[in-house]
Each structure stands twice: as structure tokens, then as C-alpha cells.
Image (cartoon, rainbow, N blue to C red; front, top):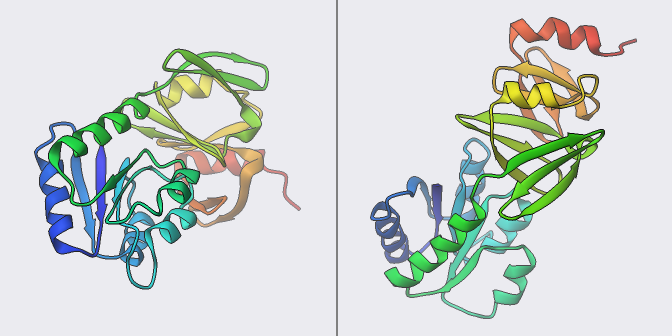
Length: 228
């Protein structure tokens, strides 16, 4: 899991970074000294897990949580317990009270690992996809999907409410989805046509996400759109 550490306390930052570097399946992707710096980082980078302090100047950790679209997993790391109730309203993975010790860190990471297990597509039925998450089948309407993004051996299904990580290839997913509703615009992106807000040069806008359009896919995209 790619991790981001956000904390204005240098000692806390160093301790969490040390724990991440000593944990085999965690990758330290970024370290930020403020929530504003983290917001800028996340606008250009994707991570799987954020270790986030709450009380920071100008913008708090909770303010950052509120601002994130399709937020990754978050483990709050703070000196005070009073934010716990509000934090869990944002479905944070865990809540660690400083000072952080390694055993408590590992326990929180284990929770994140459990949530980060890739899902599996079981079936597509009309306008619905059934994705297996752990032992449950989750029913997703294809009309809710904004775009699908390839990430190595996995793909991300992006909906307004949640991101689903699925073990599959984008080509395999494309064959299973309704052909009249989705279109490939890039080797790494498949988008739902009616979610496209704007096309400009070699970029399309879906919600607030700018998605690249390859030259090899652009003609088909323009041919399938109804224009005046």
C-alpha cells in the first residue's frame, strides 16, 4: 500500500515514517507538514493510505478529509481522543492516539490490509455488476460508475461514493460492460459516456477528474457523441 504521512509535528512524522519503512508491504509515497501541502500532493498523486494528524494550522486534518473526493483509507494519528466520534463519521480505518507505538501501528495497518483486499467481479446482469468483497456480493449499478482505471494487475471502479479495487484487466472489464454505455479513451481508462462533462484537446472531464484521451481512441469517442 502506498502511504502518505501528514503531520505538523516533526517527531511524530519521523516515527510514523520509520514504522512504514520497517513494514514490508507499505511504501512511503509522501510526507507533508500540513493539510494544505497534502491537498496539493493528492491532487497529483494517488495513495492507498493516509496517516493523518487532526490539529494543524490553517487547515485541519478533518477539513482535509471533507475536501477529498474518493478518499483513500485514513488512519488518524492525534494527541487528543475528542475527535474520534467525528472522525468515524468519515469512515476512517482507525484512530491512533499519540505517542504512536509500533504494536498499535501494526494493528491499525492490519485493519487497512483487510479493507484493501482486491474485490472480484462475479457477474454482470443487465445494468448491474456483482463484485465479491470478502465473503459478500456487492451489487453496483453500472449507471453509478464514473470511470474505470487500470492499475497494473488491478482496476479501480470509481463511483461517487466509493472506489472498488478489482483483480482484472481493463480489457476484460470492457468486454463485460454494456458497450453502448462505456467507451475506452486511453489504454488505462474506460469511462461512462453520459458522465463526460467536457472535452478539450486531449483531455475529458468526468466529475472533477481530468482523464487523458489517446489519439487512437479519440476518433471513436467523437463519433459516438451526439454533437450540435
